[in-house]
Amino acid sequence: MSSPILELNDIKTHFPISHGLIFKHHVGTVKAVDGVTLSVAKGEVLGLVGESGCGKSTLARTIMQLVPTTAGTVVLEGKNLTNDSSREELRSVRRHMQMVFQDPYASLNPRMTVFDTLAEPLRVHEVCPAADIPARVTQLMQLVGLAPRFMQKYPHEFSGGQRQRIAIARALALEPRIIIADEPVSALDVSIQAQILNLLSQLCRKMNLSLIFIAHDLSVVKHISDRVAVMYLGKIVELGTATDVIERPCHPYTRALVSAIPTPNPDVERTRQRIVLPGDPPSPIDPPAGCSFHPRCPHAREKCQAAVPPLVAAGPNREVACIRLGEI
Image (tube, rainbow, N blue to C red; front, side, top):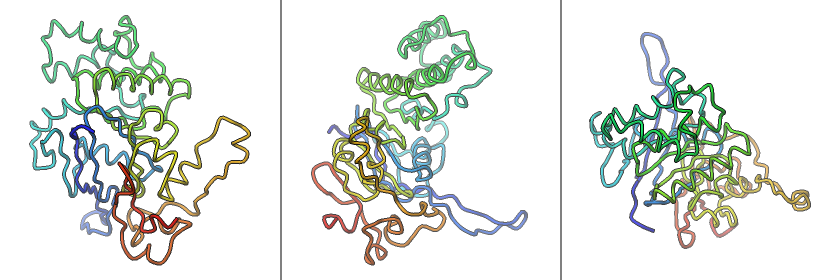
């Protein structure tokens, strides 16, 4: 693997809870992200999966510094973004990392045409002369499979898949090094999902882009990712190549997620054993002691409540956070 373009070192993003209208006092803390260490290599696609509420989107916004970090560092190409960077410094760095949001209906300004949407970042960051902007917008639309004749239309005149293509084109306008896609296909029809996934995969190969692809569907992640990180209650519990994690899961939580992937073969589907986890995920306001997964884990023992399991090597390019690793 090449040297990392993005490094996350023990990232924590906590949100304080206050009570009272006038005299506010602290009553608790939401630990949305609670100690995440990851790296992304140049040209790599990293899939980030987990249940809703596990902290995936908060981690994405923390990387972009849309949400301030409580602790830890975000390092992009050697530059520490959490080291009291000024607004101007962050603005220059954000040219190199862009984000595609989940809902294409909400992420585009309904008052702006496609041309204005794609031209705005070019003007703000002074990427090219004003006279070259129409040609650059035309190139971006063609890159994502949209006809340039649509550039004077508004978002409401497009389908969901077309809107997401516009959002991807906007992310590509500044020629970033890395893109963070926060569940970019979850709001789309299944047939359109495949088109957007193929588009992202092609663009990554063509432009040597790094991509953090966030999803809750492991079958979608397997299609596009080189590596997969599984997240539970603000922590990474398993990390490895997409093939290893999905075909040979080690952590009990990952096994439960993999068992939920439907199989297109009806004979296999009828005999498939689904792992149903008891209860609901614990609250990030008051996470369990020790392993955060132990209240729902079918293999939990008393020692699982005693200490937080670290993410340790479980083979080549494989890391798992489980005290009972090797026993189950």
